[in-house]
Amino acid sequence: MELGVYSFGDVHRNPVTGAEVSGQQRMADLLERARLADDVGLDYFGIGEHHRADFAVSSIVPVLAAAAAQTRNIKVGSAVTVLSTEDPVRVYQQFATLDLLSGGRAELTAGRGSFIESYPLFGADLNDYEALYEEKIQLLLALNDAGRREEPITWRGKFRPALDDATIYPRPVDNNLDIWIATGGTPASSVRAARLGTNVIYALLGGAVSNFARHAQLFRAEAEQAGHDANALKVGVSAVGLVAKSGAQETFYPYWRHLMDGLSRERGFSQPNRISYDMQTAPKGAIYAGTPEQVAEKILLTREHMGHDRHILQMDLASVPQKDVLKSIELLGTEVKPLIDAELRNQEKAAA
Amino acid sequence: MNQILQHDPATTTIGILGAGKVGTGVARQALKAGYRVLIAASGDPKDISLIISVMAPGAVAASAADVMSEADLVVLSVPLHKFRTLDPAGLAGKHVLDTMNYWRDTNGDMPELDEAPSSSEMVHAHIPEARLAKSLNHIGYHELELDARPAGAPDRRALAVTSDDAETLALALGFVERLGFDAVDGGRLSNGAAFEPGTPIFTGSYDQAGLQSELLAHAASAAGEELALSPVH
Ligand SMILES: NC(=O)c1ccc[n+]([C@@H]2O[C@H](COP(=O)([O-])OP(=O)(O)OC[C@H]3O[C@@H](n4cnc5c(N)ncnc54)[C@H](OP(=O)(O)O)[C@@H]3O)[C@@H](O)[C@H]2O)c1
Image 1 (tube, each protein chain N blue to C red):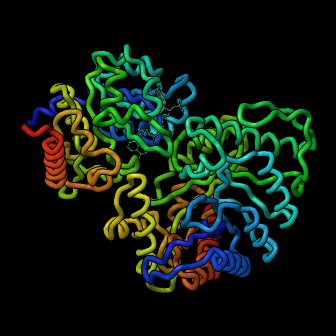
Image 2: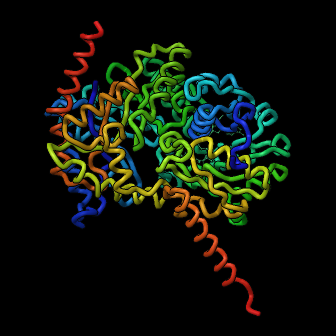
């Protein structure tokens, strides 16, 4: 099972100490985390985009390129690329370049994004929310397909100029980009990913570890029905959490609270409080904060429900201090991962 | 027993329009309560048959037309900006429960909302002959399952129901009760403004007494506003 971390490059004013952090400092922090994650044997380092004051990253690829240059084995990917306001041709080129730079470690996770700042910025119309995404994901996959077959592409759509017998350069390593689709739980999104034959990753941002069990089942069933090899397609889970030898839940709370307060004001989510936090940090809840043993157990419990292949954690919400994030990355690699690997080996043996 | 619980789930059909997060969540809870459940998305029922068999096993994927004609209670769980795709003729005379909210990030700008006390009035203007109630909008879709409790449980969550039609109100109250919540009569449909996005009721989670007092607080402040706005004699 793959484990990893992802970040949006939060530069929130620290809700506990009031400390501020510059974008420049945060970039250095992100790279330090990438190097450590690689050193401790984690599998994935992800960066997501936002277009607002609280986050340092709106351009994913340069950050991933720098991370790739400073690491050896870890996969570097977007988490997520808001495809609706991008040109898929340009996205494909950027990730193909990143793939060449990193020796085949680049991944692209496409999503709709849950904020809309990028729409007015790039002249997209919110009324085209679904149509934009649908067309762009189709084009991106068609480009990857043409690349794999080493053929030019001819394509017509509504939101970008047509492509006539065009070949897109450069091609990624082995002519293939690893593409995932991110979803927040609309069943139709699982179905879309399954029909398109891409990997899928579920944003499990609270609730219970079992929230998306049915979705994963649906994804596999639909992939099977669409004629894809469901076992070859991967399922991932992204969630928030922090690992520490002790006090992880206490440390994490004010940051989680700060972020959720904002979300609940802006979007009408349930207002967060200590009770809802404690419910979600309890063994069946979907906040992965605790000791290495607790987090390993929770990921394994999630796996019983989802059968997933990858679990990634966002540890730095609302600017959790770098030292806590680094410790957490280290423990995820040196303690959580071995615990999970050992348990999965046991399960395999028992099944054999 | 309470009048709101009088209908018998075993002989009552719930028809759900929208097979998304909310639609499939409501379907699961309604099946648990013993209702017959039909559910439709915008297209061919064949397109969602697998979704329904996995997400809400036991519910029947149907066309929107069949859902509307067969249901005793029609639940609206489509994105709000799609409300004009709902068929007014199919919903005429029907008991209808509106679970929809306005969220700019997915619905875009909707200037017509400015003229309505709550989004349900805007919806009602499109389906004037429907007997409309509003509820289930102020609970997250995954909480429909997590927070449901049997009647009498000490930690049972309360949900508000509003309608201008007494029979529809009774049916919707009974339905919400059976899904596993204390159903609180919120009065007229326009009172739905008390539990739309941005309100304390929407962002919070309340028991029966707590919800009732929030509804009263909203009514009091609305009355105050009206007083302040009314001309001085
Ligand atoms: N998410 C929550 O926690 C939550 C909580 C309370 C209330 N709500 C409200 O509930 C509503 C649904 O939200 P959601 O999150 O479930 O959305 P969703 O996952 O995007 O699902 C929307 C569903 O509506 C269907 N649909 C669209 N037009 C239709 C039509 N004319 N007839 C029948 N089905 C139609 C879509 O089918 P196609 O794919 O065929 O278009 C899709 O299955 C929204 O108004 C939302 O504000 C949401």
